[in-house]
Structures are given as structure tokens and as C-alpha cells.
Length: 438
Image 1 (tube, helix red, strand yellow):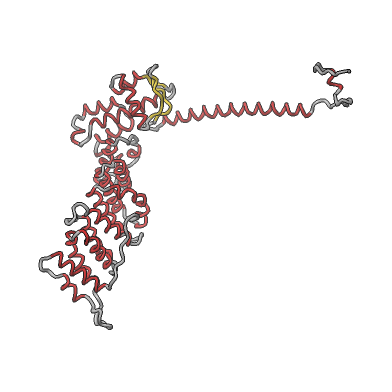
Image 2 (cartoon, rainbow, N blue to C red):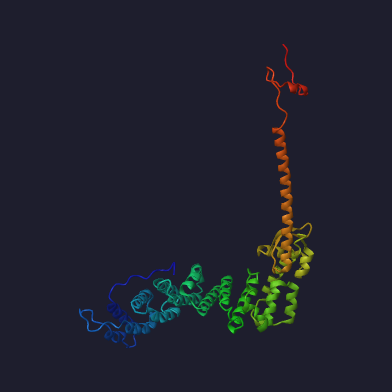
């Protein structure tokens, strides 16, 4: 993974290094078992020029990998070097991939010898392992899953976040199945949620949902859809729900979860009064689903201001009294809510305390349907008419300019000049010219 340390070079033959690691594992185990004794018969004698048998690397690695679960108890200063040695040995196998899943599993578990620095050491080892695998090798997928799991447990999401810009490229290189891709996206969503990054969590929940469009009515699609909707509802920055309503799996909630479907419709197009009616009809909805009721009220009030502003697009003004009534708040609190709506990017405008009005410059359409298309068509027609009028004025001015030029070029011919270079025909005009006779 970019930004993480590469694997250090390890010198020595496979046989020598395998024996060294087996001896070290025996020291850590301390229970009388001898990995070295089990491995030794499987190794060729390096001192014999013509060996009777070759080293059975797969058999050796199987024993070493199985015994390596004890490495998590190794002293902190030795841990990374021991894992690097094991990875180096695995890289020499005919099929290294079959030995890597246990290593990823071990590194995803707590490092008991170093509770404080263990996650950082494990990330360093997994990052080295990720970088040693060819980019197109799907084994990288399993290593990345282990990295994400470790990130989630350590709440160290900011370490992973910069690397995610490469995720789509990696998934394409690995040619992962939809199920595998979905598992990865959901793991990243979990890690982001654990680090209190709801926007990132929502992004990867949506990516996971898009892998379920072939089975939009499945239980998994339902569960992920509801989870994404809950994150969107409680996010302080998310106000556009069209990305959810466009998904077949979310549309399927109309059949499987009518209450959740109603909530989505509320926040897609309705206003604050409608939300209060819903809460009266479903008094336990928020508590049963672990949703902050105040967060819902706040979001809906801001969305209501956006709807009112969009409806007042022609007049470009919105009285404070109208906003106060729609939001069920005192008139003196209106400006605070308008400022919050502006900060949220839903509207733009100016506050007029003197007129007690909100002067609208721009408003967000929560639903872009037939009425909005008609308004766009009307504005385009108005713009077209204005351009035609401007072109007519320019054309008229151009024609007058051409006529004036032609008149100047085609005027009466000049007469002969006198000795002073004065045109006699000009004496017929009262130009106020006088000559001194002295």
C-alpha cells in the first residue's frame, strides 16, 4: 500500500532461515514442543552438493505458519522482523496465496506484547505484505480486508483514508466478484463509522448497495438500504436523498418496510409539519431504531426552508412569518435557521431585518420533477427572448453604423482649393472663419 514501508531484504537460504524461524518459535512457545525438530526432516542438507532430496517448502511453511500464531506475543522490538522473515519464506512457495490468509488473521488480532503500539506494528507488516504482492494479484484483496479490520479495531481510519483513492483501480485489477467487492465496501464503511466519519461510511454503503441491484429484494439489500438511510438521516451534511431513491434496493423498501419508505419520502420531498404527523403516528420509531429525534427535526427544518425558498423563486422574497409558521418556531429565531440553511448550502440570499424578509438568490430543489422542468423551460424561453432582443439592438446599431460610413464615403466631391488651402464651398457656411487683411 502506498505510503507504507516496503519489506526489508532478508539474506540466507530457505533452509537456513526456516530453521532460524522454527527455533525462534520454539523459544516463544516454551511448552516443550519443537517446531524445529518437525521441520528439520523436511529440509535438504545444504552441505551436500548433490542432494538426495529437495526441500519440501510447502510442508515446511505449513508447520511454520501454523505455529506462527504465537508471534503476537513476541517482544515488540522483534515482532516486525519475525513477521517479515515469515513473509519472505512464504514468498518462495510455489503458491504463496494459500499461506497468507492465516498470517492476515493473526495480524488482525491483538498484539498482546504491545497493547499500545501493536496495531501500528501490525499495519506496518500488512502494508509490507500488500506491497510485495503484484498489483493484479487478488491476494491483495484479502490483505486489504485484514488492514481494514485492523483499522476499524484501532480507530485509526485517517491512516487508511488517503489510500482509498486507489480502491476502484485495485478492485478492477483484481476482477473481484460482486460479493467480494461488497464485503470490502462494507468493511470500509464499518471502519469509517467507528472513526466517526459518517460521510465516508455513507459513500461506501452506497457502493455496496450498487453491487446488490441484481437482487434488490434480498434480505441483505434490505439491511444495507436501511443502514444507509439511517446514516443519511443522522448526518449533519447530507441533505440530498435522490442518490438513495434512485436505487432499486431502496425502492424495494416500499414492499418490505413501508415505514422506512415513508421516512425516505418525507425527507425527499415533504416539510416539517409532515414529519411531526409521522412521529405522532409512529411514536416509537426513533427510539426503536436508535435515531436522534432532534437531529431529524433539525434536518427537516433546514429542508423546509429550502422547499419554501424554491416555491418563492418567482417573487424572490420569503417573509419571516411564513418561515416561522412552517418551522413552528418564534419569529425571532428565524434568522438563525436561515443562516444554518445557508451554511448547509441549501439556499443563498440576504436577510432583510427592516422588511422582515429573506431575499432569495438561489434555492435547492429537493425533487426535480415535471414542475421543475417546466420552470427550467420557462426560464430558458425568457433567456432566449432576451438574447433575441439584444441581438436585434446590436443588428440595428450595426446597420446605422454602416449607413453612416457609406454616407461619409459617398458624399459630394471636393472643389478646387484656393491659395490658402481653403475650400471655397465652405465660405457658403457660417463657420466663423476670418482672415487678417493687414
